[in-house]
Amino acid sequence: MARMMKAAAFIDKGRIEIVEKPVPDVGPNDALVRITTTTICGTDVHILKGEYPVAQGLTVGHEPVGVIEKLGSAVQGYTEGQRVIAGAICPDFNSYAAQDGYPSQDGSYLAARGLCGCHGYKATAGWRFGNLIDGTQAEYVLVPDAQANLAPIPDGLTDEQVLMCPDIMSTGFKGAENANIKIGDTVVVLAQGPIGLCATAGARLLGATTIIAVDGNDHRLGIAKKMGADVTLNFRNVDIVDEVMKLTGGKGADSSIEALGTQTTFAQAMKVLKPGGTLSSLGVYSEDLSIPLAQFAAGLGDHTIRTALCPGGKERMRRLMNVIAAQRLDLGVLVTHQRKLDDIVEAYDLFAHQRDGVLKIAIKP
Image (cartoon, rainbow, N blue to C red; front, side, top):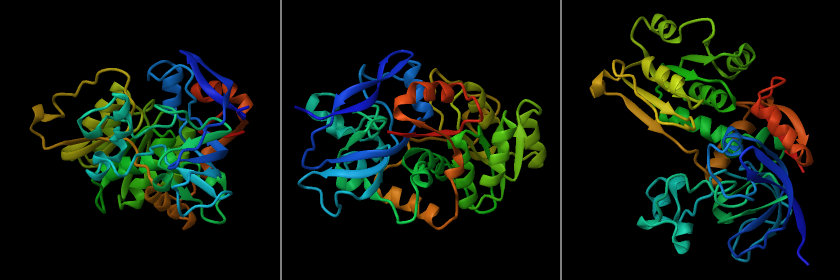
């Protein structure tokens, strides 16, 4: 008789519930990880609301911290009982897309099912957990291509310290990396949720010297200061574009990072840029976007717009955990609440409605 486990599954629009599922079987290239801590992401809320489609019954979640329970026969260099994380993005690094430099867009594993062609390129398909395979809001998760995707946790780091690495930290840092930041730059980061806060921290680490954090919540703006923001602007009190232009002497910012995913914040991110500036987009959008014509200079302004899905793989995770271990950044402060897996429905309600100063919730089976 199969061992059973608890898992949070997408049932229907507006319904994620705890169900029982068999503990996954382990293939040669897989690893079974016993989850010790996971969390809820804004993308999970998009799934809950029916704004991002996934299969009914799919286990949601994509941010695993845990212990290796069982290793596949072909996986080398790891031991059962070892503490590990895996990125939210779990590509096959042998794929064309990965070797082309776009592992997050790798759908090669779908080709055998007729769901992917063109050498395995498929937008967002590198994101497997809670998207195309069962995810991490469960007692166990099966990690595919484990040798390339499992990263050992350095001694002395807690689950909460590394919980942001699989997605939030990787995504926020990618937003900063995509913003073409140079030493001495001025960068505007719109929205200071967990990803925006990580983008603010990433901009500082990359050498920006004037970081302008924008949000409508003064508590989050206070945290942004701790993450490296030099100036904080509450959009409820000031005109963001006017303020940025004043701060830059009318030039505009070198880069902007849009970390929410709305038409309003995307347009503002465009409007605050200098000619030749870069807009780095991290938002998950649920409808078509319009580009403000004047600030886009009718397409003649030498602007760059870059989108991103966070990088995964063990080397990315190793580097991010190095930042934490070296005490360059403390993201444990983003974990504001803890809940048991059995209470995840209430945790979703708390997170989705942004009550009680919530930033991230540590979910523990």
